[in-house]
Amino acid sequence: MLHRAMNWGVKGACIGVSLGMLSGCYGLTKPQFEMVQEIPDKIDRLTIKDKQLQDDVNHLSQSVDELKETVASKQMIDDQMLTVEGVAMPMTMPLPLATAPYGEAISEPSVKLVFQNSMLFEEGTTRISKQGEEILAGVAEKIKNNMDENTQIRIVGHADSLPLSGLLKLRYMDNWELSSARAAAVIRHFIWQHNIDPTKMFIESWGEMRPVAPNETEEGRAENRRIEIFIEKV
Image 1 (cartoon, rainbow, N blue to C red):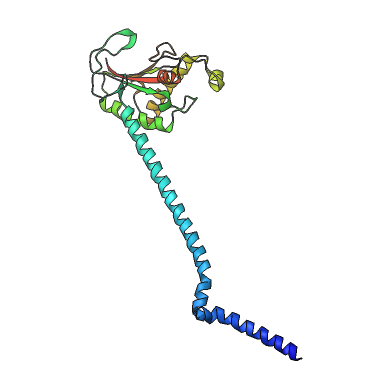
Image 2 (image 1 turned 30 degrees about the vertical axis):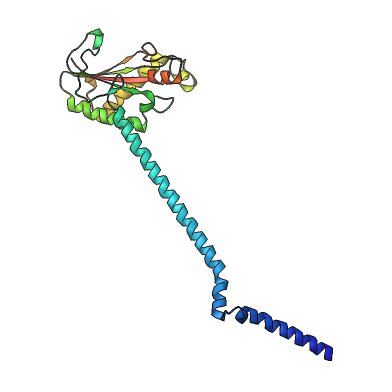
């Protein structure tokens, strides 16, 4: 009995020492000890909040990047909207020897605009793309502002020298038909979306017969796949 009582006494002392270490041996009061216990939870909450803030920063950064791309795309459209043989120009700059129908040369102020197909059409189709709609809207506005009884609009389609493939091959016989269909798509867009007088417009199609760059490279073929818009005085 005495031995057992001594054991319980030792155990009680150990428990007392342990509680003392938790509450007093390290100089902590009970409220302070409870605050220490809450620290891991607070760290977890702060970690979650930090991650949420980082996600917000990433989202804002992505939005800024998208805005920069939109601005850059708009600038590209503005820079490439009006070109004469690749040189930016205002609508009023004369093109002294633009080719008129049946090969006559004209000397009155006229304008030639050149757009690669990738700027106007959805890839592998004759459908006007969203970017193409923006470009042609700007062109249509300038056409209407400069339109008079002596103005005519000539839309010329060109292609590269590669044979048609895929769905284009099923729908069109050759590059001549394809470039004609794309020129016609531009005219229909001007008529249906911008109410430009259809009697003032006509199309030409040259297929791959009038390249402006070598067809041996992808860069050259991209330049050859193009639409030319002539705003002419006759």
